[in-house]
Length: 239
Image (cartoon, rainbow, N blue to C red; front, side, top):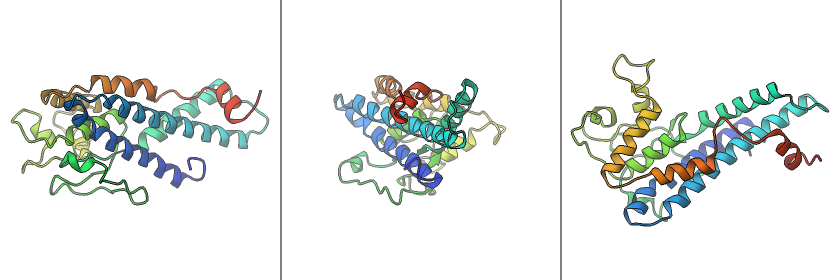
């Protein structure tokens, strides 16, 4: 699917982001119940991220070889392709904060792979919301926090995370309002927003440190990918 056309590639990568969010939304109940499968979910999410990045990377290398038959990619070109692959994956991974009753995230909730949810207004605080973003761990922290049915607590971050009526702001809105280019008020980076989410989860007795470690182990570095020798040997079949 990644190599079939740009539309299919974009949809597949967005679906991976959707699956990551659903997986992450199971984490609070797993940790609160003393269950260890949060690490399994983190590993699955990490592998999804790694496979998406490597698939895009291989597809871009295929395209380069089609345009330059008989030649090998030099170091500068490989670095450029690698950077482009990172940008494609991180720009297409989408957040789907699962807001509402976490019990609804059990086996009874099927993922509609054909028609994933589009962006919606957070009028009820219970609608899944899709928001393009460049930080996949923030997306997962957000999904885990949102699954705990959070309420305003009176702390300074309430205005950042909640609407005046107490419903959760869509992540897209939080990011937009925290963007240095869009606001003259205090801005927050995705990393800072992740820390806010992690602290709020910690306040509920939910420590996602191990989840993050396992995710990062399997996801690898989004600025890295398969090396060229691996690509030629395993995907091109060259000796």
